Amino acid sequence: MVTAIMIVEMMGRPGPHIQDKLKEHIGKLDSIKGTKIIKKMFSDLKDIKDQNMFSCFSEVEFECDSFKTLAEITIGFMPASIEVVDPSQVKINCKESTEVLSALVDRLHQYDNVAKQAQGRIYQLQREMTAATKMLEIHGLIKDGKLTEKAIKKIKKK
Image 1 (tube, rainbow, N blue to C red):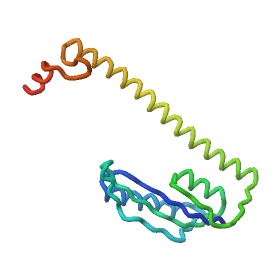
Image 2 (spheres, helix red, strand yellow):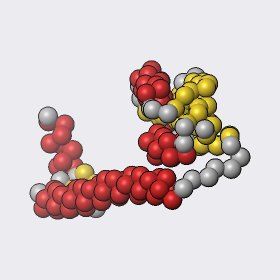
Image 3 (tube, helix red, strand yellow):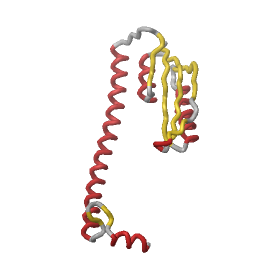
Image 4 (spheres, one colour):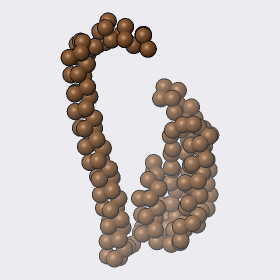
């Protein structure tokens, strides 16, 4: 058995929705085979005014039947922090270490794919913005990156 404590944070809005989603997310831990929750605590909702967001976190102490299960939970839940409480030393065999590393690599590939798709979309949007800016400049609606009087008049008419 491996005992660990993890902290999972969520941020977004609206606040009550974030709290519900965090509880739902932590609740999934109950359904993971070989895992038993020992203790869980949920923070109060914090209003992050300068970002117009809300934040909350949960601290969960749990037991796993193996280090592999702990690694899968860590990869799946993406906690802000995780601490192995017991045992003081963990021994894993080659098969288990291969499975843990393969799961980690798989997740990294998924994130890399998302990042590449986002980069492609950003590049596409930048090209479209450049083309739109040129069209607005041609029609005299933008000059030096600012709306012209002509553009302001058109906007006010609508």
